[in-house]
Image (cartoon, rainbow, N blue to C red; front, top):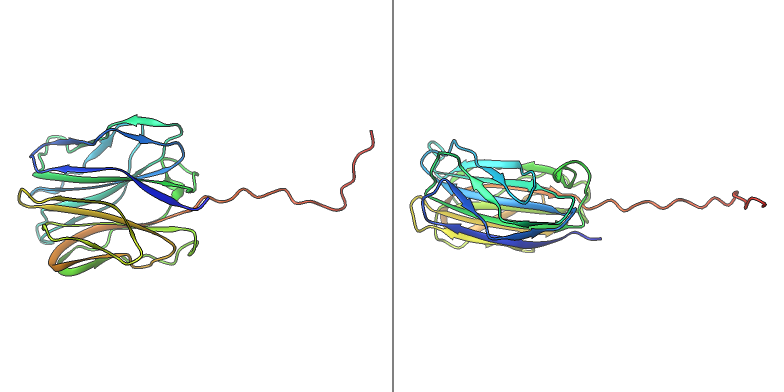
Length: 237
């Protein structure tokens, strides 16, 4: 089965809060779920915990951005994989730390490697590219894919402006959430593409501050068949 992806939910809020809850979703068994989260606050030292759907959510990338010297935003990507269908909401919890806003997008990938735990076998590589303070484009650098044809690239990126974020050619969107009603703002977008891309990217019209995370997603390994050996003979009854 070839890799495929769908958006399960996306959302956000400009209301100050210490935790945020997604819409109810259905996680299918043995599929990779990737949750991209970006929030804004002057203090970005607090990492959120992700709970819900009887799933274990594991952080795979994180990057502070929006003024490298004293960042106002943090973008993270979390993974999970469940053994049986789960239905419910997801809680993004910053503990006692209140965030000015938060945006998220949740995607699910079918046809992935199901080995390991909580989706670990489906992730070949993960990078958190360095933040930039003024650029019209932002990209990650991945190494050669384990399978340049059948594996997929995933990229989540954000900046603090209302400016539109344009996907790289050949990519499909996995969410676009603009929470810029409170300062500092949060504009989050995610994309994916089947096949090798060593520099996934996004662009915007004006120079912006950027942060993000990129992954290589591994296709399921086809089960090998038992070879036929011509020397085998049927045993007499």
